[in-house]
Image (cartoon, rainbow, N blue to C red; front, side):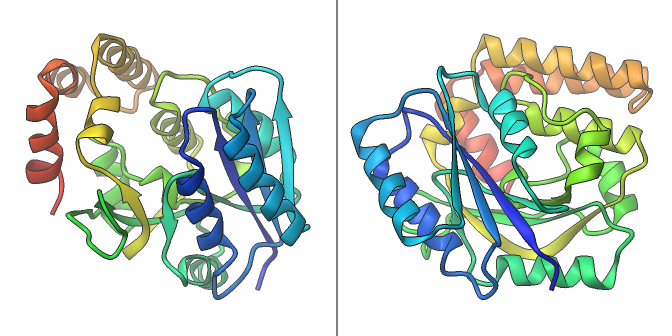
Length: 271
């Protein structure tokens, strides 16, 4: 199997127990990563630092990149990717839980299909424990299906992806784009003719519920959505009619009350 890196970022608002669970799920895989790059996005709490120190002692393949101040996810991942040594890089968030054979499944796809540049998968969402999923975000499998889906919604679950390092760099690496760093990256990669695939199975358990929905709302997020759709239109990735439809729908979802937005995510956008 090819060597691969895992890329993570953590900031001060994360819960130490969530980070502990996330790291444990990485180091309990059927195929272990050759390195884990963990970016400390600014100063952390003593609890978070204690978790990181413990894992660094147990796992010398864990490398810590320390940023002097909080710069946001896009900039933190941009810096972290520069420290990844291997061509294949798996993303992981600091509060989610990998399915035990996640990396094995993705490596097998890359081995069988060297034409793919990004391999993602499904997520399920939970609020108490990972074994009590409340919803599943399923996504299209093939590249053509993914490209079509992209025009209306993000076609990849960011926390599940494994990608080719060189192809992400060729598209400009991660870039700051408020809460939409991943969708912006997928657009630029599609513009560069990168090839995508989604494993039709859950690869990561994600913390959901009203707290997740709250992070996906507000005027700042709504305005970021408009900027992103405008950027896609300028690249020719979507047409004018699609641009207008997306702006209306996505802007509305961002500014409605959180309880209603939770319903939209759990009942209308999940299975």
